[in-house]
Image 1: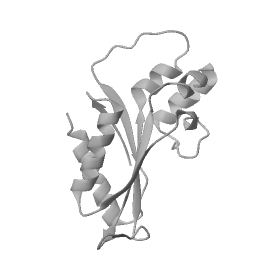
Image 2: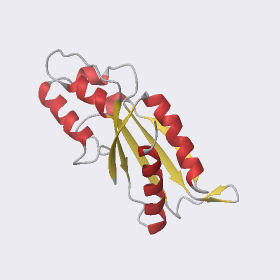
Image 3: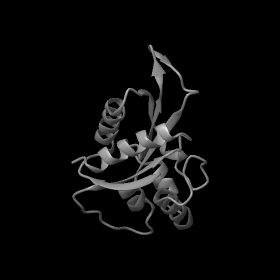
Image 4: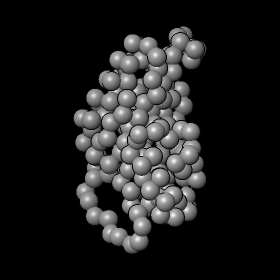
Length: 153
């Protein structure tokens, strides 16, 4: 599943909101959250799904020779939130596990452009990609979380 959302917040704020949403959506446990190293953002990195806007901009950056600027950018441009079921305080990650991968599309686009340009807009565009949990329970959970993300202000 994939969605693109336009929010008036920075990536750090969005990470915090998504953690809260995942934690409050159901009795599922927020297992782990991590920022990516910007050096991992390349078109051939296996965690960048094919067919996403992130992959498109990274491929464009590779063709334009602008990936070095993106890799040395000071703030993180992507993060992942992993969620897993737990019972009685014990994580049952074999029950199911899903990942929410977030890419800051606005900055990826800006940093991978060829030549100089100015950026001016009152929102940040984020691409939210979820890894299929391979169960109807996980799919319902993912949809609830994505719906709540779309209603963020």
